[in-house]
Amino acid sequence: MTEGLSRTVQLARDLIRIDTQNWGGGRATGEADAAAYVTAVLASMGVESQTFESAPGRASVVARIEGEDPSLPLLVVHGHLDVVPADAAEWSVDPFAGEIRDGLLWGRGAVDMKQMDAMILAALERILTSGRRPRRGLVVAFFADEEAGGAYGAQWLVRTHPELFAGATEAISEVGGYSIEVAGTRAYLLQTGEKALQWILLRARGTAAHGSQHMRDNAVTKLAAAVAAVGAHEFPVELTDTTRELVARIADLLGVDDDDPDAVAERTGTVSRFLRSSLRHTANPTMLEAGYKHNVIPSVAEARIDVRPLPGREREAIDAIRALVGDDIEVELVHGDVGIEHPFGGALVEAMAASLGRFDPDAPVLPYMLSGGTDNKSLSELGIAGYGFAPLRLSPDLDFAAMFHGVDERVPLDALDFGTDVLEDLLLTY
Image 1 (cartoon, one colour):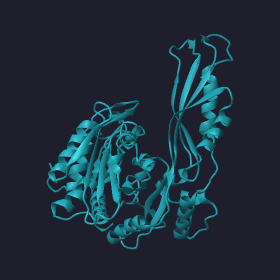
Image 2 (cartoon, rainbow, N blue to C red):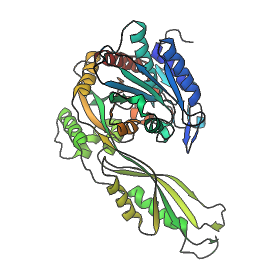
Image 3 (cartoon, rainbow, N blue to C red):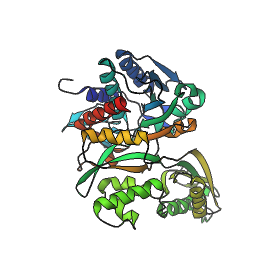
């Protein structure tokens, strides 16, 4: 049933119904099906696209759209087609049914980030089918594998087909442009930076033995102590240009001093889990692996840690973890990616703020640093400055931060329509 649903909601629902779970390690499903869907939608509005497979089924779609002013640098507008896995037993709805309930669209990808994929397609469809053109030329991309670092998606395309992005200097994508409420005032967070990424492996070695023995050289015990040390460690607050301005502006809205950034960020409600993480390095244990039988002490135990250093401070963060776990624990970098940070100023930032202002007048726009990462990291290898701008006007009672990779992911229908309006305006005016 599509009656009464906006085009953006229809597109987002269709995309959610294509199961594109990405478990990492090269294992994913459905990306080729989602790529075929996106290709067909683009073709229906007269846009020719190319599909690239980095491996069987790992499909990304790229298209170029001519702008009204060919003298302007191109803008990359991109999303990703994959989603993190969802355990249906934990959800109150089928995570791949695209169910609409209580004025919200539910399903894996409703927030991260099939909603933005749909807004991109709907905004382009409005523009092109009405005979108009975006002000500047666009490179429109829908990538595979973002949820596992982009090795089969954006990173692979940037390194093997850089010509696809020739002429582009800036990019917009996910996790920015959404609203929060501070002291009763709605404000929008515009993402101007991303923390770096380090996925590391901790490895402890010991003596294999029968589980009944008196054993002090136990790999599991050593690893457990190391994991506990990392998990309990609180890195100090260290502000960057982005977070310094963010804290100052939030403090101004609150009418308080900005001399305790953590306390200021804490007063932003549920989004504080994002903002407090941007003020420091973070390191979270996420996976443990050891042993194969209850009565066998294993010789090796391993843990995986998700480390998010501040931009340009990657070595500092990993050195701190080495010091925490001690010389007896091996520390291996499994995957790393850069942090990025751009000024909260310039023509694109001004244009994004102006587009938001035309649909929500007087709401302040604030810079912020994403504690996670996006495919903008890969595009930065080509000198393309990437920002987070998936505009959504949200009610303060929705715990939006919890929707990312969370259970019962959902987004308000009217937020999708608002975002499409803002995105269309930006593409026509910037």
